[in-house]
Length: 280
Image (tube, rainbow, N blue to C red; front, top):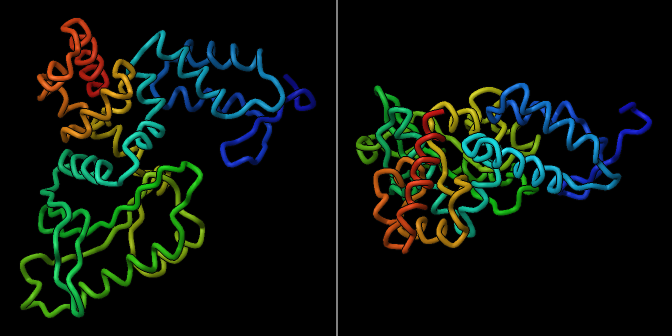
């Protein structure tokens, strides 16, 4: 397919761009698809592309083909969208990030009240490891096109400044060495610029370039239950309501599936997919 015949696709935010088959293949490989699988899916989709196709349509086709061949790979390919299924509130995402930090060796408390110079603050994640003390504010978005902007970074910096200025005699039981702002989407360029200058760490879906949220999820093997292709949407919601947000938690609490009247055969399929996903 030459440049002249390359179709234009519509992104989720309404902007258009030329379809890049190499980008599609790269995303498939990143999810764990083998060379042959990634090339075959790329070739199949590229050969049938139509002008004005949406990125959602391309994703849906690629996901369906992956699911047919390898469910764990399909689950990783759907990871970004899986995080959006945690909504509408941000609490399941907070619980998931807490589990991620625990898997990385942190001692974690969430929604902890920490005294500041002026007022007390509820910090979403308070984590300690090897004498390091981290406070994190989480911002969850249901819209994949929404970026966490500089106003949020300013607000988070103000909160941590108040904590850092607290009398050590008041705050010595829960010190904070550094503050972090975590989101399931992306940051605006202004938010990144300000955070770098102000000393606030950022963690987003694709930020920083290395060690971002996606990288850390894959490295820790902590996946959201919403990524499981064998679970129905209503089942995911009920498991989340029961406090199960990761595949590891589901493996340990598989009896919850039986409470939802899931057949023994499907319980086996779901648990096997969960185990295979976490083992990758």
